Length: 551
Image (cartoon, rainbow, N blue to C red; front, top):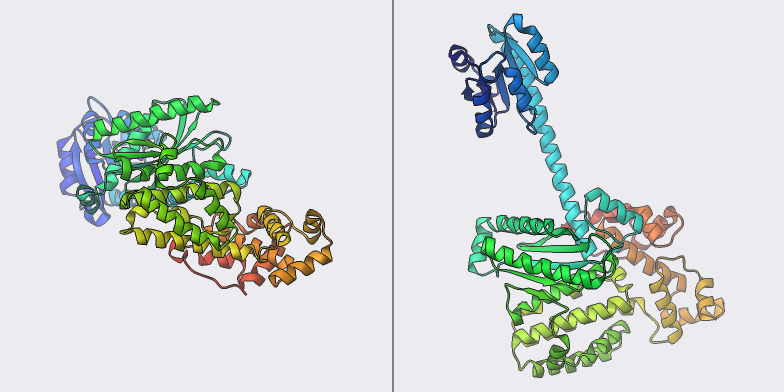
């Protein structure tokens, strides 16, 4: 049912149109009446009608003036003019100005029905287009949030594809500028927060905080900002300098921005907010390091308390590491993991014994140490063995929050479980039982996964003959070197296709294949699926955990 406002200075005409016309079967209802254009404008915002039927000749403000005012409204109502036969010049002017149609006085009921049928069809068409636009807008926003989340997690895109995606989804990100990530956590998820979630008002609160961040950014001309939804009551805030400045100046601006933001939210909204801030990175490509730092900073609230800004850089790592565990063990543990060295598990046992002693058995401190250990190890692995993210879902390791576990033993067992999972992956991609030649060959393949790797390439790299290297690789691993190269490339292809953001030819290019058709044949042989079929399997998030066996 669409709504109508009738505007006429003649009370009899208003009454006749209201009482003598059966609007309901035509799909309309009269919601208000106005006696002139000024009164109509006053009621326009109150009733928001879909149609305005207005006389042309009225005192104070006539129908043409009213039409001109209505044109200023976005998605304003359709205007139908009422006119006498001798007033055609004004009718013509009204049509030129955008009136949808006109009805002559005295009003003929049949002609009125004909006109309103056209009005109904037009309004229905508008409604369908708006619903379609709304669905498209929601879909774009969903893709935009997914893209932003992928970027935060360190997903790599070719430069041109990245620039195209940023432009398409309107992200305020510059790959040639410094970047810093903060995570804003609203509330404490206490009883009050839980009640807000149940009532559906927590989303409103989150939106108010988002608007407060946007207003704060408007007051800082030196930064650009991108905001993303991470979870219920959790927003990611990515800031970059708007111009080329030094890192020290950017640090000062950043510190001022987040400090003032917290105070503004606390003052205006009376809500508890904790902001974890990661380290500034020199390039957008390294944004995941700042993101992990922000997450780690946020976890410090269990030690320092919330309702504050916690900068990961300002936290006294050295003092805490000496207190909770020896810092030098992190690098050793990470190297053992990436070498699939069995000593890794004894090292973990020793390390957790030291953590337990250093934290005096306090569970929150043990959880804090485990979170910090994961963060520091992941940073080291990311800097030294960056290829691992292409073959292993690193989020399984980095997204764990050990403060949620209920005992020291649970924390330790889950940490060991995570390490075992990663070690098994490393074993899969670094076969050869520790043979240094095989290790060098595998390391080269993993570090150059996006290039065209041939037997000639690797034999020259190792200063060995092709035949000797082939024989040695087969003897140590049980399969041919080129089969290993294909395996590595296909596993990365599976991750890229599963993410769903890359087309087949783009994946082929990223893997160093010159022909996408050749890549497609290899992929089908390896997985029994074409790239398109495999991608479709993971189209919905509900399918993300499917396991596919390769031939």
